[in-house]
Length: 100
Image (cartoon, rainbow, N blue to C red; front, side, top):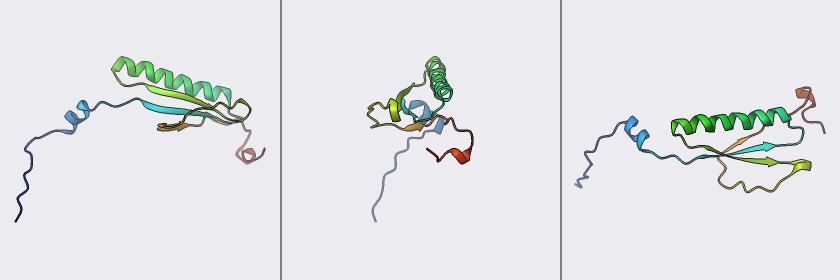
């Protein structure tokens, strides 16, 4: 019979969470055609506010990348992106969403 040695170190969840160092969350804001400018602006404002509050509390900031599609397209490296946010579209109703 094999004997397995188990460490006698004890830890609580609270202690383990406090010892972890998290990297910043990498966020992409995907601005597609017909994206409402106000919705994109609000998204960026909310993330900037979260970064200011997080900095005051010692939390890592969000690294925000803006991805523009359509006529305002830009080339962006999306490797490592952990969260994609698509701001609201400027459409009058859900029925018109699929129409060009």
